[in-house]
Picture 1 (cartoon, rainbow, N blue to C red):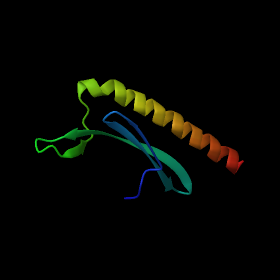
Picture 2: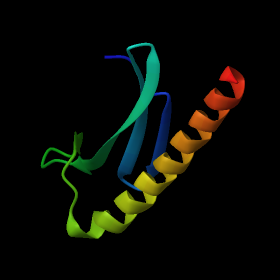
Picture 3: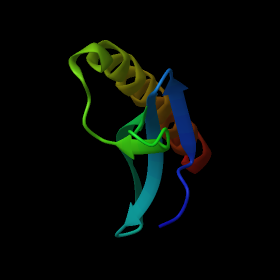
Picture 4: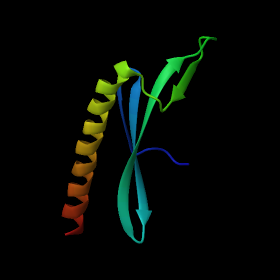
Length: 80
């Protein structure tokens, strides 16, 4: 798997924006993850959010939506 085209991080929650192509058209997707330390004090990642992480996850998803809209606007402008 490649690298995301943009990452937005706030605290332990991270949103990654991915650009994909299908049928000659580009589209975007987002993955959401949360970092935590395990019992051995090693950093791990999960896509399960705790109750206290939800407000930050919403904030990051909104920021991802704005970023994707901006990229689509640029794409449309360039393609016009």
